[in-house]
Image 1 (tube, one colour):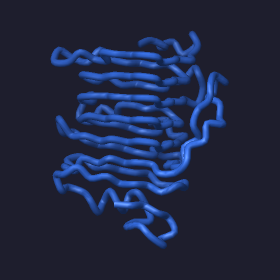
Image 2: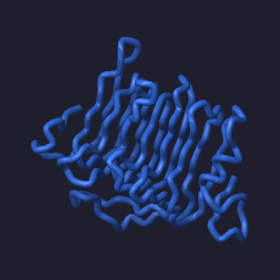
Image 3: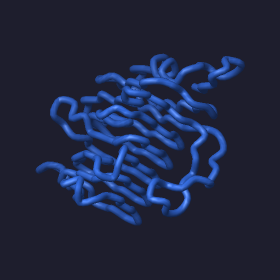
Length: 212
């Protein structure tokens, strides 16, 4: 599927329409999202059997600074702006379900985070989560797997929580967090976050739970 907002080409004009069209087919489906800002509150419902791979398409310009002013951070061409709502809610309660996101900025002012994830394997590459990335604890369960690579997770302030998850397995590489990181240790059947590599955490003691 190809999402392009003008409707001149592509298969859909909104990301949610593409997700809905591909729902419950039990296969790996890639959704290419063309350059632009999409004011949407994306929802992938519980029980959806599709393995979604959301890919932002368009130029990345390394002319921005992260919130700590450290290094450069790509300005991604595709933004999903949830406004006061969650930009992406993945309500999966199914073990071994998968969601992959790549090259997308998810933005929200919601206290529930920019992205809220449930059960399954969540993988993000070169994404910006402008607002927290939070496990919604669907059915009281944590994500089975969490993999973040070259991502930025930006809370509203360094005293707020940027990341709050408790996966059974996970790897975080080359990421930047602005705000507290609360990472649970998995469970008796998992190892929790096993690798944290080349990652920077900008927080303050005022957060109270700025721990990994």
